[in-house]
Image (tube, rainbow, N blue to C red; front, side, top):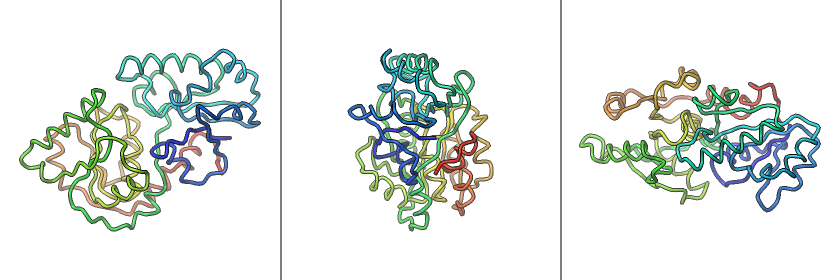
Length: 281
């Protein structure tokens, strides 16, 4: 099976490319024609970011004539918060259903509606560099925030910054993608404790796995019960789930760093693909 992905230079694409897997094909909106001639089963990474591969009838006909199995993994939420994102997602899924054999999703709610559940994972860089010494004792937030679609995340960060007990415990180093990939990784690894508020996905994102691969302490906010995801971290004493600020405060002293070898082996890209019956090289 060939894995088809964009190269974003961070996040989801790094969670694939940093493993140096041979069975990966990189495409972009300016360079994708080669993908239609691949004589293998295909696994598309993203129902939205790869939309340009099936956004016309001509392209769909090419996929209908492709003789191998095809699957798509929706690593972003289909039932999106922003109406125009939701409309595009649903339209893309309607087109994909015409030619793919399998739809995988990672969002808890999407898994009840659209397809089989396949959780995210992260770049192996965080496991490989797990022995990097953490030099900052504060809690790190490094990610996207401030925009309307991150309303829950914005509220939590604001509540922390106005809380007399917690405001001196947190460092917010960025609110957008203004770090290079290496700088982002080095920044995260310089902290022992990392905050991961709810974003636009109902489930664990790549940051969850970045922190747990590195053996550091994760404060993971959730939105309701994560029936599927919770089982992945039930043996991780360094993963602290919470929903509200008072709950976070009550648990903030209970976590400790751990050896992350077992977690990485059970939750890396090879384990994820093996769970759907695919060995990748």
